[in-house]
Length: 256
Image (cartoon, rainbow, N blue to C red):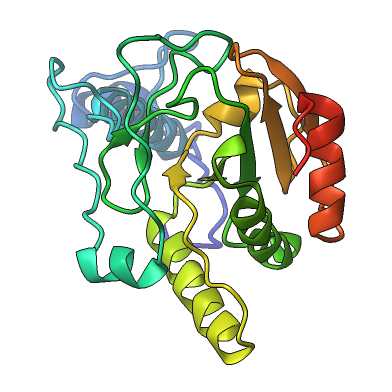
């Protein structure tokens, strides 16, 4: 049937008494269940189209999914793409502090293990239990974060060992985060300001934000007490270093 053509019509002439029977024989004996006459072409086309749709639906249902686990019949998930070590070095990110075995971490972030931006090795948000910790959550696409990150570097330089300051990239695009850090460091060098050297964590699933019950917005700063409990989170960008220092002092009692 050509596109745009109307339905075919079977005309029966009253003066050919054997027409119905002979037509049924020529079509393989297929007859309508209601009248006993031959099945028209539109009905056959509908049956054929229904069969094709059923076959396609079955094929889609049985097609292996990309997220199938290795124990299924589908292909295993594609491994994570490696990040160029030169890009990690250019970012200026410091090696994350090692965890403490003598005093295990507590609190809602204790069981979270992420990776370090500096070397891709496993690292924890609260790696040094017993020390006040400031976690600055950011992402490469967050405009206020670009202004805020250098402020946290200046605050960390000012606080020294009194407060542990880490950044947490809360987005799957790790390479874009490292590229942005490298670009920011170039800008800071041009401005003769301190470069970014803070330890950074890669959190592709925003596990820290979820554990802190923080809103789905960036930047967010999570303030953690020495016992691992969360004092509060700050869901706004900071104005300057003094703003960070006053907020940390009020929440954690550390004055620098």
